[in-house]
Figure 1 (cartoon, helix red, strand yellow):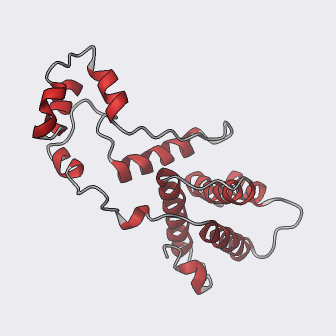
Figure 2 (cartoon, rainbow, N blue to C red):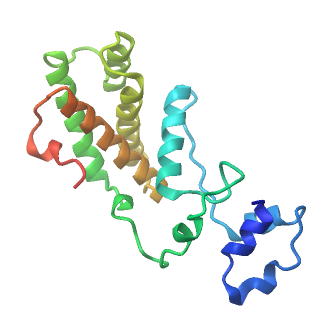
Length: 196
């Protein structure tokens, strides 16, 4: 199914007239004007593997219609026809307090994992060093860094997270918690229920 065919199947019957004159050459402009686009800006130092991980999270949560394989699954209509305003509980907002708590918990998690406080290095350096030593898988280290850096942006630059940023931060924290559980790391209750 091409982009033009997909647009025609997604537009409600009342708006079909607006897409009748579209061609393969003009459908791209229609998509730009009537679809939502989300841009994520990442630090150039973020590893390709981390970028791929973040992209896969975004694809999982938002199921973008005009991105990815040219042939969409047959159930694409069910993803599009969710009632407007209905929010997935996984896309709840993430507050600076959540991020601050997750960062404190991340430090506690690393202390439990590494046998005590880290002296002389920042949190990001600590994570990178443990990953380089092969003690923390790279994708877990990337998730940890995403949580820490998102907290820094929210705290020091007073940025209100977009829905996509909130999903990436919350999902990254969940991934870190799953890894911690697999390592049998015991965390305080406020850390163990990081989804709240």
